[in-house]
Amino acid sequence: MLVALSLAGQFHAANPQWGEVTIWATAIVTAALFFVSIILHELSHAAVAKARGLPVRSITLFALGGVAQIEKDATDPKTEFWMALVGPIASVVIGSACLGIASVLGWRTSTAPETPLVAMLMWLGVINIALGVFNMIPGYPLDGGRVFRAIVWWVTGDADRATRIASLLGQFVAFVFIVWGVFRFFNGGGFGGLWMAFIGWFLLDAARASYAHLKITETLQGIRVGDVMTQDCPRVDGLDNLQTLVDEHLLRTGQRCFVVEEKGSIAGIITPHEVKAVPRTRWPYTTVEEVMQPLDRLHTVRPDTSVTEALETMGREDVNQLPVIKDGRIAGIISRSHILRTLQTRAELHG
Ligand SMILES: [Zn+2]
Image 1: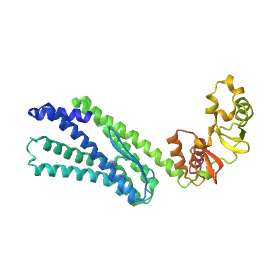
Image 2: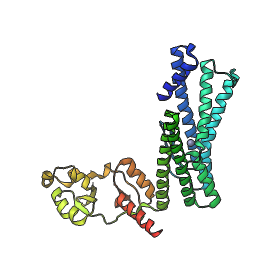
Image 3: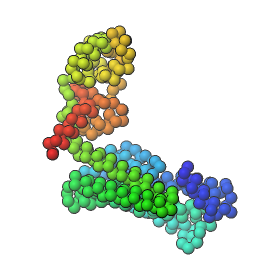
């Protein structure tokens, strides 16, 4: 809507003789095509990722552009390099094609566009080339920052160092944006300056977040669910009441997750979360099996699932633990706190 509104304003100023209907129709179609070209940019990232065997879950469009959700990070610098570079290339190609068609239709660089079609092509051409150039700014996690990280990785052979350097450069670029934007704002730059500072703030946040994410992924690389899960999950009887569960198990053992048994087989799991949902006065009259999370409704993982994938599943399902199933039986439980402990231990050992 914002893009369409601002385009309508531009067309109004340049070609008021087109009339309201033509101006608004052109603005809306142009805005829609702008998002189509962002999707094409993201699809080009996704296509290279897929060709290199990295699964792509989704493409998200938001106010500041798009993001292709690629489920795994590239394992070699060449893949990272091409995966990042192809997006800006796609944008520049789309932009050049638009300008090319506009010039075939009679547009000359020195003149303002006269027909709606030429105006649309010209705007799309300029914005896509600008998008390609902006994305090549070496501010990680922008495409340019990824290209930069891949080159450092390629040259030094050290992914960890490349991440650190690219993230530092990304934060530096973000600072430049913020300082320059604020400076422009106080020197009569108005909204443009604020907008620039806002983009800088967004980049700073993104650079920090992706650094943290990469560190976690690197630390957890190669660790399987089976390596960190608890195997000796305390078991409770499904017919016990909640008061017994709290007094005998929850408070006494300090464990947060219990496997519920019914007639010798496993029926589900119960955590403090489910207990809390029942008023304290009802605890003696409510059985564990009434409030537990039944096994058939739980998302499960296998011992050979990677820990990063388990974390992603927990994030998606908004839970703190997952039962680990092997040969149809519960082999253990993996929780966020297990993974956190593993991360802390590894961080300590690596000094
Ligand atoms: Zn991109």
